[in-house]
Each structure stands twice: as structure tokens, then as C-alpha cells.
Amino acid sequence: MIFHGSFYSKYLEQDTRVTVTGPEPDPSKPYRVLYLLHPLCCNADTWCDYTRLPFYIRSYNVLCVMPEVNRSFYTDQKFGQKYFSYAGKELPEFINRLFRVSAKREDTGVAGVSMGGYGALRLSLSFPEKFGFCAVSSSAFLFLKADLDDFRSMTDAEIAAAWGPQMKHDLEAMFGPELKAEPGDEIMTLLENTPCGCKPEIFHCCGTEDIFYAQNKAFSEVMKEWGAYKYTFREWKGTHHWNFFDEFLKQALEFHYSVDKINTFSCFE
Image 1: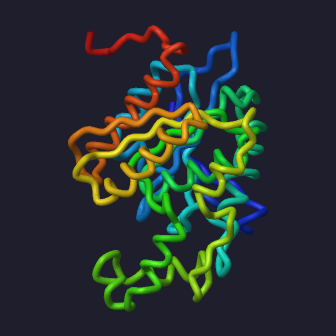
Image 2: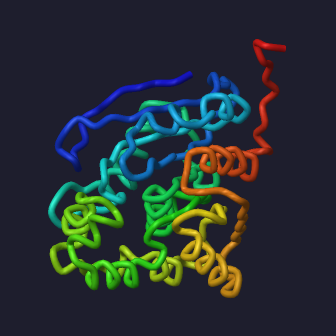
């Protein structure tokens, strides 16, 4: 099943789109939930449009929820809307009212790629009492302070040449014209401050030819050396592309939800 719809968000003060997909409901048990976050330049339908998510998800008792947050990096913007509060607070409350889903943190996960990878990590580490699992690929802003230092050292023309003319406006909307992040925006700070008894499990992938590979590899080395989290990193040949993200999605679902494997049949068998 795939639902496409919208509802009024009190945090955004407007109607906002959401896409939901999953197997047919099982009357004997509630769904587990995976919030699946889109990357930059995408929308609530992108995961269904560019991956085999509707096919994969038929094999698990998992409901995938895909919000739409424009180019916000899932932040409460200084000059814009409160997308972080919407995705972390309001959307789960809405889904819990609308569908029969488990409220247990071990049954609730969040995943994303690129911009969505940053959003997934930030949400799971900011609300560890809600999210027991986080899956990310090719994440941006893993070391946000250093990234913003780099952006401040670049001219507008250099930023536009590397990331497109809209990026400077996006950064200023999120962090103000001085590009100053708060401690709650920094993934490394959140990792250090998450309580020991409430740390989400993290599944992390990146392609070896990805534009963010160096940053993701460095992050993986920090996480493995630290050893404070249940953490898995996988890498294989691939670029910052939906071919790679589709395989990441398949592996993330198998990694965390294989115990919920449903016996399904194919109409081609």
C-alpha cells in the first residue's frame, strides 16, 4: 500500500505533504515505524519514485513514513520554518493517531541519505527516548562546525560554483548570516550528550566514490574508536546516487528488520 496525502502542521502553519507505505496491516500486531528522510532537492515521494522501497517493504511489518521538508536540513530555521520540531514531535504524534503503530522506541527508527542522513542522526540523538534505530548513508554535516567554517571562508561565487546558487541562502536561513550553529545542531555534540541507557543503534553506509566519502569515513573511524554506540559501518564502490541509496535501503531494512520478515509471494512466480 502507498498513501499520498497532506495535513495541517501547527509548527509549519501550513498544509504539508507526507507519503506512507508498508505491507498490508497484520491484525495480530501493530506496525513498527521507520521515518525515511529525503535528501536535498527532493520531496515526500522521492523514496518511492527512485528506489524499490514499495517492493522491499512488503517483506517486513514496517510502516515507512516520508515527510517533506524542502531544503531545510531538518532544522528549526532561524529565518524560516520549524522543520526539526515538526519531524521530531508533530509528525510522530500524527502517525500514532492515524495508524496502528507500536509506541516502543525499539520499534521506531529513522533513516536518511545526504541531507536526510544529517536529519536522521540529529533526530535520533535529540529524541533518543523515541528512536531506537538510525540508518544513514552519505550523510552531510557530520562535522557541522568545520563545514560552516569552510563555508565562511568561501566567496558567494565559490559556494554557488560548488553547491549551486541556492545553498548560501539555505545556510543563512538555517544558521543566520553569521553561519553560527547551536550545540544542538552538531552531531558530535549530540553523540557525546546522549544518555548511556538510551543510545540508538546506528547503521551507516557510504560509497567509496561519494563526494562525502572522506567525511563519512572519518566519522566511522571516530565512532569505532570511541566504541560508545552499537555502530555498524559498511562501504562499497558507489557514488552519491540513487543506485547506491537503493542498495543502502535494502541493506538497512535487512539489517534491522530481518526478524520481522514476512512470507510474501510475487505475482511473477
